[in-house]
Image (tube, rainbow, N blue to C red; front, top):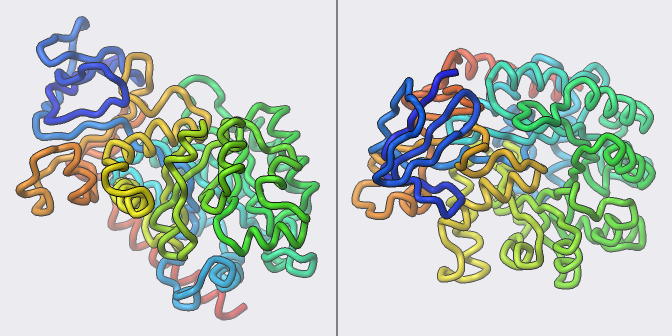
Length: 453
């Protein structure tokens, strides 16, 4: 096992109070030592990486995404709409997905995330039309090829329009098929051990697309197999109105009613909670994934990050779908999160360090991981390194603040599980331009199929 010393960084944020000005030492897939400013490694070093021009961070963690939506960015029929109408415009398009489209969208989203300094991604795939029953298997093959750490969530929709739900019937599955496939995926792919590269969680799409019975049965299966639960909740006021009309409950009351109010659950968006609900969510140890760009694009609202954290909830960061964000750039979300949270709480109460915490430790807690999210001995060697040599950084003084406030867009080096996946700003062993060309053709083919349907 080779050892690598990432030496004397320009600036480093570890997520701990340790002095790491001398850098960090990686042995195989693990961080084994943090070096103080004047310190030296205690182990023999095989490779030295000069980090004197780099800002070094724990690998960023994307706690909510929809990889397949990279195929429908800036889609004309969905422009200028809020969530429910936006979904109704895109469900018929997404129903035309096939396995090649899933593969290419997953590879492209993974590439885009890696280039932005993201080392772990959670993807929420819930739309499984006929012919795409092995969508998650396709994603696993693609993400393992790309070398990104993943938590792939087996999403589901079972409540069609004719039953009072939002999705059209041809986009849903039977509940038995959903549960059977969920168990199959967990038993075949879930790596529960420390450092697992591929994990599985269960993720009914939302209260307006699955039945109460499926929510309860999914919770039972997840508890039996000790995996995480994930769903969209309280993204819009429309969802709150739907829950009150359909179930006679507010969304958080519904979450408790179906057995989801516990620390193996994390929620995407989590915008429209009242004060009492925030206290309950914090007491239960729920995770909330803040998706700032998506929430702005769909005008959904602003997550109450500081109150949620104060109550005991974990707050992470996600790019959300590339059709509601039109990007999969996680380092860009740090800037968006900082600014939109300042809009809620004031400039003096939210800093770039909060954004670092949300995108690393907070996201790690969201997805149930204690082996990533900080740079410390015993943690996995997931590391992002950024240079500040672009014109946007000229004249900046605080390197850590500049990374967020001046708007970093791309990492220079990215290590996942001790392996370099990005070097000198380029993907390792991936032809980016060939991937883009194939992905563009798949997007055109998807749009063509949708028009012919």
